[in-house]
Length: 270
Image (tube, rainbow, N blue to C red; front, side):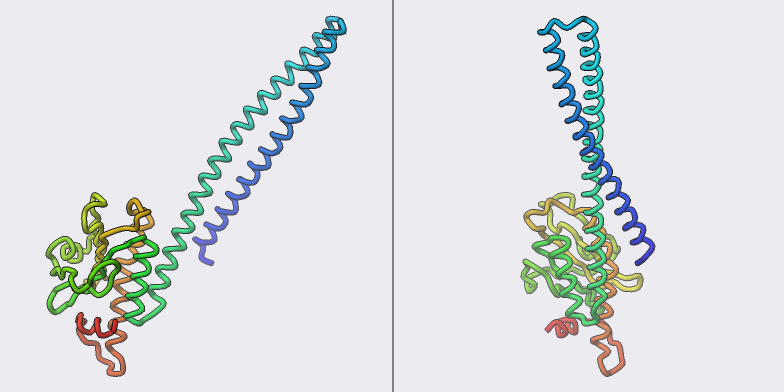
């Protein structure tokens, strides 16, 4: 286990300890409050009995003082209970946030692991598709690969699109071509504007392609912080995995690396 994961686990366990302490304290306050209510009811009955029975003034004063003290104690406990209840709500909210953070980290880890778990170009493309669809929550997108000799981006995979009729932008032209040329992600200001996002796939040395998102799942209201982290991961790691898959499949038994072409990529996808 890495030091970072160990720190996260320790932080989570400490938080759970505090949460359980608060819960136990709340239960104790409720039990104590119930006892006070019982004692208060008994004293009020005694006070009523003393009044009806004509008890002396000192007895009545003593009973009234006890009732007053119990009322004060009850108010204090109720105030403490309110504070603890508020703290518990804060704990629950923070616990939910921590759980979400852990889920997000798990998703990022899974995505990174899957991208580098294969050297087969076709499998890499499939993994990227699954990440975009399942982890980002996309219903329509296109994955483009740059044909280096011509400088044209060609659609090679996607979801909810007709690849045969998808546009073929040139590097440096249009929203897609400019995003890849500048290695800068494009995100639309509105969910009604297409494309919603363009994620350039590039390494420090090579521009590989782009993921163009046109539509999200109906239940998704927009991009989240973890989506941005997934885009960061895809920008470099997906590009590296695609290049590795292409080069590995190209080398084969010949031991020579050829220039990347879309025709070769399509032949690998079958």
